[in-house]
Length: 389
Image (tube, rainbow, N blue to C red; front, side):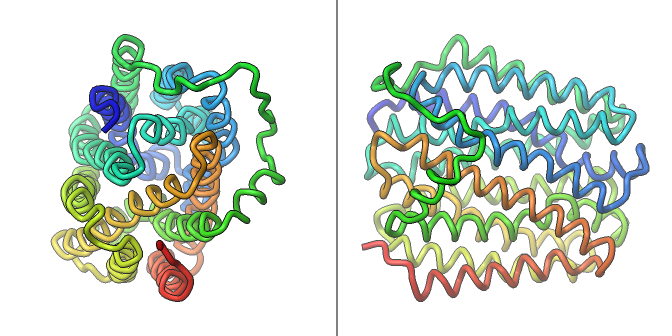
């Protein structure tokens, strides 16, 4: 790789930040339900607003990072994230919780910048391995974060929020002192559009041969997963009688499996197995995993099912991100990955909204079966239309 040290540093920056994210996510639905009395659909809105902010700000931050560099945006957004967690700790109403998640969503829009950072410091041949590192950082965050959050929840949800803020502050300090700038080709002469939603540019990107299809596939995959965001913990809490600790352990299992798959399988398979086959395998496993979740019956049954799901998503996400990056021009890495991440964020808006609505009004099993159906659509599109040659 061009700059292994920089890659390791950005990995640890993302990992530390995601520790804070992982602490809070399994607790958020039960906190909103038990402490604030928010409805299942209202919880869907709380979860969705985070991703709505990412949808709006991901392309802008991606473009800005092409112009002014990756490091300034990564450090600024880490501070925003820390502030959002502090607000969460004192949330006593739907509106305060909503504001907290909006600010967290803007801060979380640094993922496209991190992906562009990875693209800066890896060769095209090593790109899939580099992108898998982001998945590993996410996975590790979801291994240790929920476990720490489950322990902190015993002392109060406010303590869990402050714990999350602490990790984001640590990530900020780590980035300030150790993260080198990767975008050495940035130019202040380049003009960028400051539109939050640049429909013209999004349309242009979607018309790029194969890139448009890959971004569409990624959108459907993320929508399918996002049906779980506000409903998975509620399923455990309301229908399987799981505790916050058990829900936290399940998120930890998902994270651990994601780490193993993205850290080892994808790394070993990169360049040796056709990427189209990896996408087909990943969507098949993900489809079965999603559809079986509401029928897991008990903790061990659900743990087995989410393991299958996590193997599928662990294969899919870095593979598609790698293909998008490989097929994008070098001087538009941040912008195109930003569009991809933005549309994925839109999927994370629509997924929880549909998930919360269908869970509340159509039955607890509906969000999971919906996700399985759309994953099947992805499988069909990949089989008939995706070429990686």
